[in-house]
Amino acid sequence: MDKIIFLKNKAIQIRKELLQMIYNAKTGHTGGSLSSVDILVALYYEIMKVDPKNSKWKSRDRFVLSKGHSVEGYYTILADLGFFPKDELKYFCKFNSRLIGHPSVKVPGVEMNTGALGHGLSVAVGMALAGKMDKKNYKVYVLMGDGELAEGSIWEGAMAAGHYKLDNLIGIIDRNHLQISGNTENIMSLENLKEKWNSFGWNVLVEDGNNIKKMIDVIKKIPIAKEKPHLIIANTIKGKGVPFIENDAKWHHKVPNQDQLKEALEILDSLLKKGFNI
Ligand SMILES: Cc1ncc(C[n+]2csc(CCOP(=O)(O)OP(=O)(O)O)c2C)c(N)n1
Ligand SMILES: [Mg+2]
Image (cartoon, rainbow, N blue to C red):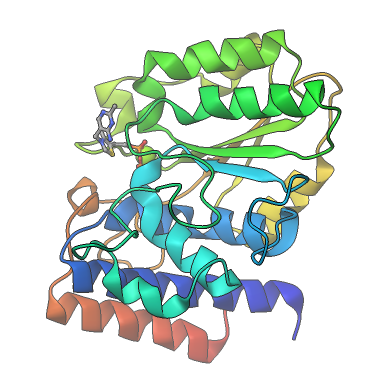
């Protein structure tokens, strides 16, 4: 099977599993998780060098899910790759499970506890700086939310990355234009986002974050500029894949009921059967 078709199908499968997880747990972040799936699939199945059987391998690429609330797709992918048993996903958010509602380093493959927004970039800057100092070749990827950019600490991290010329650091913004309570431009306007990051010393690329092939292609082009961190503004749709969840702030952490889950799974199944991308 063509690799891209395989990855597109994988992204549909991951969406089905994360919806089931949220339904079972009766808690979770539906919209932002669906938004990020294609970015995570591109990174984990094609770009990053990781070893699920040796999650602490020193030369591994690092990934920080700074928008930690999108943990459901992240856990599903880590389990699918074999970082931990897939069967464990059914205990998500259950008493005594290590799969709590935001990323935890107790889970193999997770590099940083996140969930309190605004901290992932600064830690990723530290990881990238350490890589430079230790003369290691690994790359550091960090996925941020657009609403998350309202946190001042993000801009401190952005400034430091530019200052230290961290060309081993790749930031990705899940630019879905929604945060918890509405449109980012109404709550804390971000535009002109590209110019803002440029002015902090980053090389900025803009791509369709729900198109796996385009995401892979743009990341593979990096480095475009030497001695600069890279940022990809990944344009996405919050809730991508399930039309009645798409582009609706109410679905930020709404849990599907039984009928909604059934309908969502049927929609995703029909995409799988057609073997086509969303
Ligand atoms: C420091 C902090 N403040 C507030 C929250 C509550 N919160 C969780 S998600 C969210 C909105 C995030 O929006 P965005 O980054 O755009 O995420 P996405 O749209 O990708 O879900 C907020 C405010 C938090 N997790 N951390
Ligand atoms: Mg958002």
